[in-house]
Every structure is written in structure tokens, then in C-alpha cells.
Image (cartoon, rainbow, N blue to C red; front, side, top):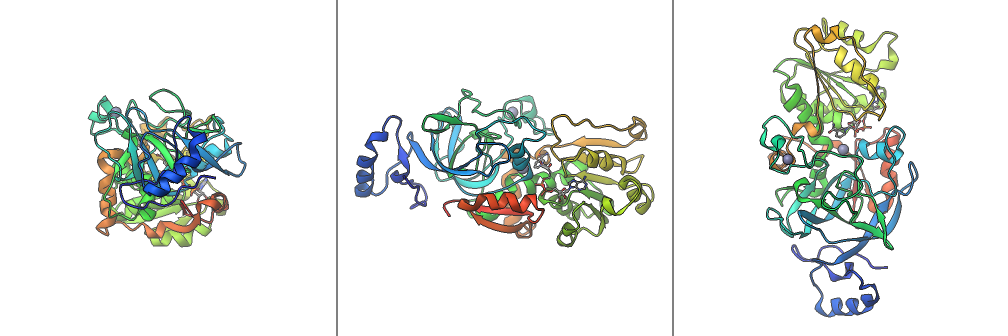
Length: 418
Ligand SMILES: NC(=O)c1ccc[n+]([C@@H]2O[C@H](COP(=O)([O-])OP(=O)(O)OC[C@H]3O[C@@H](n4cnc5c(N)ncnc54)[C@H](O)[C@@H]3O)[C@@H](O)[C@H]2O)c1
Ligand SMILES: [Zn+2]
Ligand SMILES: [Zn+2]
């Protein structure tokens, strides 16, 4: 088996990990060359490495040796050093309410180092520290030119695409059989290929085992509050779902100076944890015999000023909307619903001057804004450690799924090469 050793030098990649197209038979020769030259570039070569492959919906991931093709036009190949599990991975792996696409390499919250770049990539180079991001920024479309949108025409989130935009093909294969990508990131692999528009270049001093969570959950929740719900100082904010995304939304509310932060979750274990994030009051819908909207309206003299839904449950989305105060209340949906869900509310709830919004990635533009979120951590304005409850080696990645499914983890960091 061809192993990928750790990075020896900042800008070089060991030849142990590579096999060029049609050069499988020269593997032994390459090994002896690599040991005599010690280091040679992997640029333009196929890299063999470990990846956790989902062969079937809901079945444990299997550690496989995959071949990762070189990056094509506008693509970069990244050596992933740390990745973490977000509930969106779990939804598409379970494929209960989503379109199944297997075999697939999941993963979209991660940090790594650029190994090589494809044609036409000028803003990234080998050695850059980066966060791959599930939605992108081409820089040229109307959305990228708008200050108000991060819904890039070319690179916006696409959960059904299993290949790269350039040619529709996968860059991953096992014995010639293609393995599908997920969200254009597929970070449950020691190496992955990502469109350069989905890659944020960050401060190389930033610890990747912490800032990897900025590449999805943290930014999504914090941005949903700060950029979309925009509570005013002293206002009340309800957060539905106290996983990493919801706790990041609470953190955003705390940063905005919210007066009351009401956490809503079905899992009572979440409440103790949430206190660290500035959540002051809790509602467990299971403990009430009236609708949660009504419980919250009674607690807040008619409704909260802002609410942020971070569960993925369509019932919670409706509750989050209907619990905001009429006249000015704003509700923001963040959770990813099932394919056939429909949002049902009486139109009068809107006529009564409530606002319903939704957001991907907290409205952050991945390349433009994310380096600044990492800087907030570096400047100690933002604490990431409290989101990280578990750490597992890559070989035990399935444990991260167990922790999330049991509701035990907020974020579990998966250490590659371990
Ligand atoms: N819009 C985006 O850009 C974006 C990005 C990342 C994640 N997401 C979505 O955000 C959601 C949260 O992700 P996460 O990683 O924090 O998940 P998580 O599983 O860690 O947390 C979800 C929490 O919601 C709670 N919950 C579930 N149903 C509920 C209900 N009906 N009422 C109250 N609480 C309920 C669960 O108990 C859990 O604590 C997921 O749907 C995920 O797919 C969206
Ligand atoms: Zn995510
Ligand atoms: Zn664009």
C-alpha cells in the first residue's frame, strides 16, 4: 500500500504518495527514486491516498486507497490536514429525505494546504493555508458583484453534483471506478480537488485544527445572526437547534449585544453546553403542551425580535417564523430541509409585518470574507475551542458520525494522517 507521509517541508510534497497516469507498474521504481531524491513534486501526478468512502446510504464509511487526479482548469488540489463533521454530511449520507448519490466522499468542513494548482489559478499557490468551502465565489457574476448576495451563479451550493464543474468528471477513483464528490469539497480524503473559487486563503499562522470549523458551521450560524437577522443591541433572539450552527448563531447574538438569547432544542443535554455561548433561557418543545410559538410569545410579550432556525426540521422552521413579534420581527432559516418538505404558514403572519429570510453560509462571501472571520479568532474576538467537544483520528471517522447521531458532540475534529 502506498502511504502518504506527513508534509516534510512547507512547500514540498513527498513522492511516496504519487503515481502518474498509467504509471502504476513503475511504482517500485518511483519508490527507489523518491528515496534517493527524498522529495520530488507531485504536481501533475495522480496521488494515491486514504479516503473514507460512503458506498451506501447510512452504512459506515470505509477507509479506501483512492487515486486523486491532478487539478484541472481553475482547480486546486489540497492536502487536507483536519476536517470535521457537519449535520449536512450526515443528511446526505443517510439520504432519507435527499437524493442518494453513491459511492461518494463526504466532508465539507476542513482546513489544509494547497499541494498544486491547475491552469488559470493565479490567486493560490502550493503551500497556501486554505479552507475549502461548500459554496463559492467566481468573482464575475451578478451575485459576486452584489454586496448583498453570496449566491454565486457558477459556484453556489449544489448538493446533487457528483463531479467537477469543468468537465463533470470526478477526480477520485478506485481501480478506475469514479467516486462522486460532495459539495465540490469532499474533505474526507487526505487529498481533494476543489474549484479555486471555493477556496479561502487564510493566515498561515492560524491553527487549522481549530479554524477548520470556520469553513462551514461557525460562519453559517454567526453570519446568519450578524449578517442576516441583524439584531439591534438589547433585542431578544431565539435560536432553534443548539448544535454547532445554532450555538454559532447564539455567539453572533452575543456579539451583537442581544439582551435575551432563548435556546430551543429537543435535546436537554444541549442546554448546559449552551450556557457557555451566552444562551440565557431554554425551551424544550417536548416539555410544553402548547405550541412553541405560543410559549415564546408568552415569555417575550408578543414574540422575539429575531429568530434563527438551525435544525433542518420544517416544523421548527415554521415555529421559528411564527414566534417573532409582529411589526418588526425577522426570522432566518438556516437548516437544510428534506427534499419534499413544504413550509406552511398563514399569509396573515407575513401581512402582520414579520419578515422571513433564509441564508446559505451566513451570507459570507467565501473568498472575500472568510479570511476576516479567521482573523477574528486570531484577535481573540471569537472563541472556537468551546465548539470542539471531540477529536478522533481519521481511521476512526465513523465515531464522529456516532457522536453526532447520539447528540453528544458539537463539533468533532477528525485528524488526517492519524
Ligand atoms: N444554510 C447553510 O448554509 C447551512 C450550513 C451548515 C449547516 N446547515 C444546516 O444547519 C442545521 C444544523 O447543523 P448542525 O451541524 O448544527 O447540526 P446538529 O445536529 O449538531 O444540531 C441540530 C440541533 O437541532 C436540534 N433539533 C432537531 N430538531 C429540532 C426541533 N424540531 N426543534 C428544536 N430543536 C431541534 C437537535 O436536537 C440538535 O441539537 C442542519 O440542518 C444543517 O444541515 C445549513
Ligand atoms: Zn456544513
Ligand atoms: Zn459568481
